[in-house]
Image (cartoon, rainbow, N blue to C red; front, top):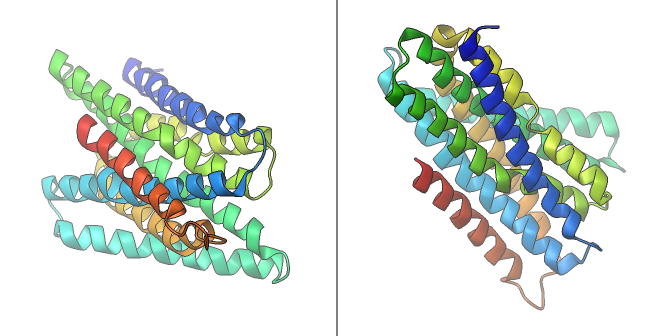
Length: 260
């Protein structure tokens, strides 16, 4: 295996591990208290909304501007709308397959896991491309830049792991199953990282579309599924879950801006 591909694999295994640590936060919930889980569900929605812009749309626009091709605004818009339409079509397909009676909670889980997984694919590609590009000239600065990309994405993955496992716990899943599914949502990153390092020249041109596609998928799930769900039974403290959204957005934005 090429050394740069191996470096990409190690780096993306690290980003997956941080996701697993985030998913492990669900273990601390000894019992599914609705009030706390609504707060955490709101936090998950805030994380997804912030990640859609800071981790996906903004770098998609920046990368599209560096490439010779369609205007950056067109790339981001097409990718974003395609991602949202893909999740909408998936929702229809899942609902039809499961039936109207039992589709609610199961459908929500499938869409949540699918959106986070789609989001992790371009992130893994981004790490792989960063390390694969070192084949064209590996300097200390370029190596540190690739490492910075991996570290930044890894730290962002911590709240994203919780963004999957906590909603699953709220749906009544056990802590163990919630953790397993939460960490599994990032297993695509090592695969995408190796692919990106191998196909660096070809993947680079598609990365802006992939990033904005994932953003559209995440926004649809956060707005259509997570936010309405966390606002249920909030008559006594109507802003409790809303503050979870605000805190989740702020935490994700802080990580993205600090880590560049």
